[in-house]
Length: 94
Image (cartoon, rainbow, N blue to C red; front, top):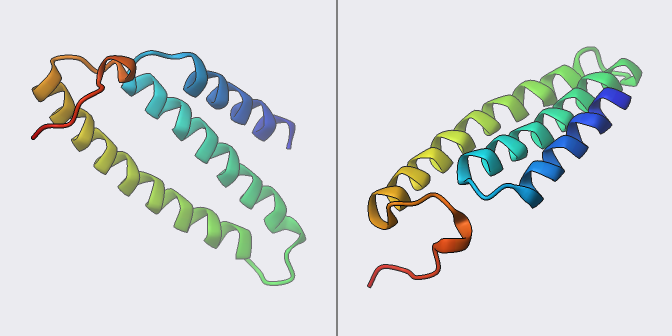
């Protein structure tokens, strides 16, 4: 639980302080991994065998799909704006 809390705090710090979209995405992944670690830790107390691990596996698959979509969006934003700084991207394409 302490490791999970540490990972979540590191991810939250990265999301709030970084100016690079890739680093923000890495921070979000740290936070998702902290949640997955909690699923596995609380799976020990589950009445069903492997319930926490099944939730963790499902979360890992969803996180991988989310990263693929986010990277595609970041690449398209870079192609249009020539930057991946979220603060400098303030307009939408007409």
